[in-house]
Length: 242
Ligand code: F6R
Image (cartoon, rainbow, N blue to C red; front, top):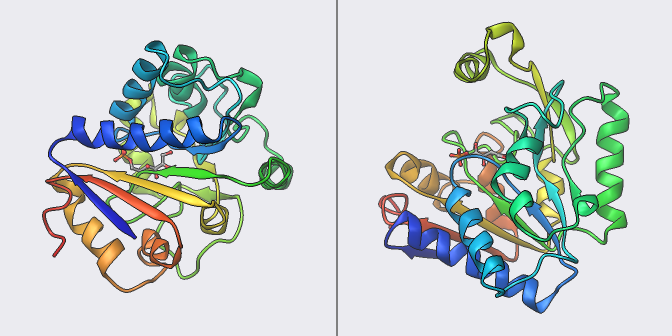
């Protein structure tokens, strides 16, 4: 695992965007895995500005997102599809047909999960996977568990996650009860992985994930077994690394 420490959130975003644009410039047909959440927002803004400044084109890139809530339509403001359109896709030249997010509206769990795995295989596998890091070490929606999940699957959201998310919905009943997510295996099969984390709140999980024991209780710790992982941190997130 290679760790890069940048002086600020903006600098972290710049470094991560540079890694992605360099990758895409070298491999214009790259298959990229993407994440939602707060951490990548700065990086996505950098990618948009790089595209606007003609430093990169996404016209032949294919993207696969890590996860999506069950039951939310693409135009639902809390869906991850909506997030990706709003924060990145609508502002760059990626072909909409080449962007993939698990189909939250499809309740046929096996069909959604099998198709997502097969699509990734048919695309030749993920070349570069972007990851954020949950406070408990989750990656995608893979929460601490007894085992590492091999494939795309459905997860039941914990009551605490539903409580936390309910602020974004008009009632608790509207909060999705489950989500589709790539498995740990799906993530580990990517040829290269880029992890970003920022802020004091991530410092202890950064230490545990990259310097602690490898255990499904800290899902991100499995990344220590991957051959090609780059972790880009700001100074606060790096503050507990030796
Ligand atoms: C998002 C995802 C999550 C986030 C993680 C960190 O698609 O899969 O695992 O990466 O929850 O979220 P933020 O960046 O909001 O701290």
